[in-house]
Length: 291
Image 1: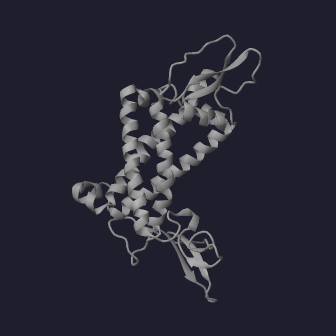
Image 2: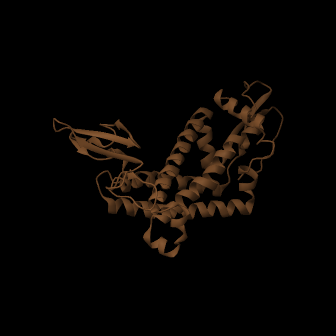
Image 3: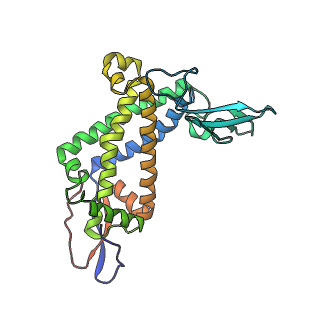
């Protein structure tokens, strides 16, 4: 990654192609799917807000993580988050929350966090399953096209030079100092971007999909090996939540980077495919489209 340099008379700004059409379309379909999958998934979680490890999980089993509420001596609700043997007071955030009228309710998650906002496991499942299959189809298109046109190999697979510890450390330092690439370097993913995107596409997304299938009794009948792969349906449910949480973390970091790098330029590149970069005056870079 090159350090940011002030724009002088020796520099000019031009537009270059940054993202191919398929990349842009699948990106925005992913955005739509995530916006529905996350709150509908939390609606499903509210049916039993606890996570277990192994094949079984019920009220009699000790969960690894649990969200709940209990009444105090003065008949008030107290929300809690229990992780192993440690219990945290989460009143007002998790377990015990207020509705629009200010009334307290025994509810694992806030009303604004679920789809629909009211309790409806059936409706939450319908939203979740429909957009989950759309998400799978969209990912399949992205991967197939990416393999065919070389995008995955060319743009997401780090080179041996980029995986050098010194190069990775230097990239981390540049990110910490908010020094973003300029010129031709801005047209390509840096090492940390490649590793992050590759981790999401090749690890987190397949994990979310496979664990989601494992939780479906119908799919278990078709693919019984999935239960053994994840050590039981409850283990799959826990892994599903962890992988989804890591995807949310990736999205938050991604949004912060977009804002810091220049949201107008970055969002425009994902809509039109054109990115504005700085180049030396009189220098005409290669304008081929980068998938």
